[in-house]
Length: 83
Image 1 (spheres, rainbow, N blue to C red):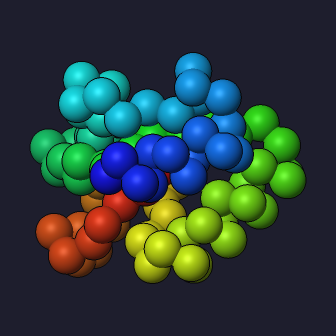
Image 2 (cartoon, rainbow, N blue to C red):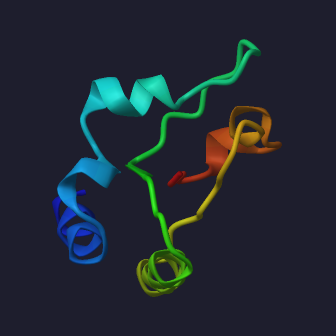
Image 3 (cartoon, rainbow, N blue to C red):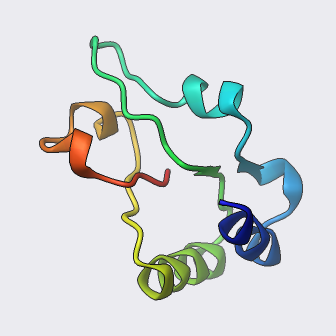
């Protein structure tokens, strides 16, 4: 996780990379009873940032998920999530 955090901080400023447990839990559920605890939450503001995050996910082989549908995603217990 430390390596991933360092890579994310090369793309986004610190205030838009959430890796503290309390922040990750804040994004772990929708209005349902399902939880998917992400390994990190990122808040990109530009297409370039999104592109660089997708490139990082491909290189580091983690799955990107986004939006309120994430906790209800089928097979959620098998995924490494990144929002």
